Image 1 (cartoon, helix red, strand yellow):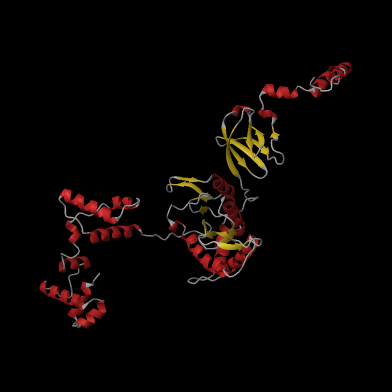
Image 2 (cartoon, helix red, strand yellow):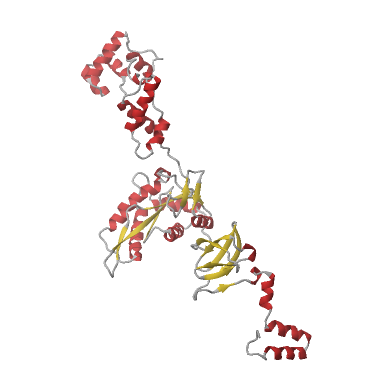
Length: 437
């Protein structure tokens, strides 16, 4: 904005137009225009103390900037919404706006002004706020955009390796690891290793909106976190607060560190060849140590020193055992009061026949839930398909009695009566080739 006040002040001091141009950074035409206008209005320095810059501007040039004052401004909220739709452009919205103004007898903006005011509205909405983070409060996680490369030693095929990045928000202390894919197992394993590397757990975990983290994100009040991811967070005693959709500034440290990782780790290893994931990760962790120890450019210390001195003492303790990755499935209880998983059958209390249940599967256990309550637990079976793991208490009473209807039960009954009864019953049971006969 032109500083009219300064032009008037320098004029009163006898400065030449050239000097005023250089001092105020304006064209000679502007200086001449202000001097002539001030002379017409008998404005002399010093100005009245109540004369603000805005009031001076309106006094000198009352018509400037007021072209749109008598014209109808567009509905900015409606325009923002419509521009998100496929095929809708500013040109189309301006044509509709012109037609609406014509029908209402109002004066419209020209297309250039229409676009200008939309841009001004958008800039207001882009205001950012710096939020000071507390030590040990938050960790941000994401996948880096550019993958690393692994060469298959047998075929020579180049395989992508995807880079996981976890960053402590306060110190910017980072953890990096490469994985063959970005699936659930890699995502969870990366978090387990990250917490082990940090030596503790931050209160808040801020992920991106990948499906391994968030199933649905309709804003901070309408989110559905992936079941396995939520279970992992519960194990470590942390809270998941996903970044909003298309809002990278919700996790600026992870976004910024991704760029730094791409430069100082991925790009630094671009000329090296790796034949296994383990080789790649050993090289990454070597570069990561240098990255975390590198001094900051604009403040004292390094990421490592800031994390070690101020964040690590405030992190929550790690649980006694690392989180064991679990897979969740749905199953229907069959009429034989068993559910089937991976070709094996596991019993459920018979009251749940034909009910849909949630099954939590780990390498060692099978847990069965109904309405979030665990109703059965089994050791996981391996080997020959079709094996049954049946808990007697899960069976109806008549089925339990049937199991007891065998030779051992009759012999124990006979023994309680006497030795002769025992001999008779034993003779009956052994008189046929098959006991059931």
